Length: 158
Image (cartoon, rainbow, N blue to C red):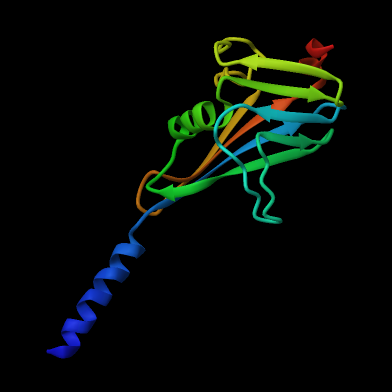
């Protein structure tokens, strides 16, 4: 009887954690241009890279021809396209997004610009790519949103 009393809570804890779905999200800037850019966001979300523990306070450099991925802290539950769009729009972007080109010119987009072909706020733009992976308990366990920057987009900053 004592063994059952000890094993039942342990078994219950194992079952609850084994079935608890989790998710991760990431936002990527794919800089396909010939210019170095500094990605600046105004939302409240802050990026804490795991590699060195440095806190980026709303800015991130992306060298020409490189990609920069900002992983969001995951959570319990699941994600999906609507969830990551909401998190990027309100948690990361905030009221405005800037691309500082070669440290000289600035290209600014505002939250009200949801129709511009080059606007990061236009999530239906061909500049965006969305990927996801299904979770074990239903829903998506991983979602990724990638925004492509190219020379044609950056010429409007000059």
